[in-house]
Length: 283
Image 1 (cartoon, helix red, strand yellow):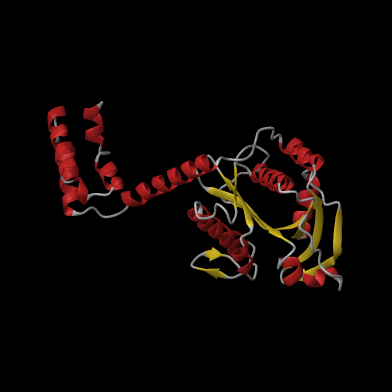
Image 2 (cartoon, helix red, strand yellow):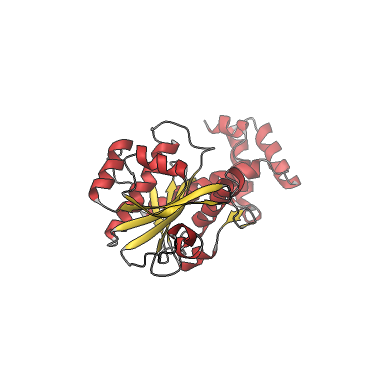
């Protein structure tokens, strides 16, 4: 499912953006070997400081599994400032009704293949649908994207083929780059939806997106805690829980934990209550 993060709501989704930058580092730096700036395991550039719209895919487990960046062409953007050689000397497009789409990626390690939900193809289509529908709502007529021949083939076979290209393809480091034009039309959106079999609304509400993401972080925090050495006090309570032989004894241990609960985080209390003997007596 899709959440769009822009200059208006980015303060609510700083943690989601952080995970998105980590995904970009894994894809562009580790997997593709692009010459990008990665700091502390996160890939971001100065275009991210211009308050673009980030179209982010979050799966049912609350993990960030894909993203795309949308940037207005009226100011600095990658085709005009980085890949301008593609244009063969022609000036870049400058229009409030044309946005640039860049930094598209999906988590191929987590996502499976095919066209089912939680697959690379499905999430790719969902991001495309979300991007075009969001842009169309904002009054955008066309999207321009710097892509490579592989991505060009992906677009062509997924009901999303570019209708034109700007300039000529040029070698850019380890890849060949080209500038593709795609209209933000109902026909294009319908084509991608038909290809992927997606009929539902792809957008999450902000509340649901935060609920999913925070749930994922809570599970991760609990899992990380399970691998941390226990303190002496924690060991004591685990031993008391494990040795309890009646519901009364279990309740006594629980009461003692609650009495000094300010010494534990919520995750620590949860872990203490998850001993097998405790669950057995509570059942």
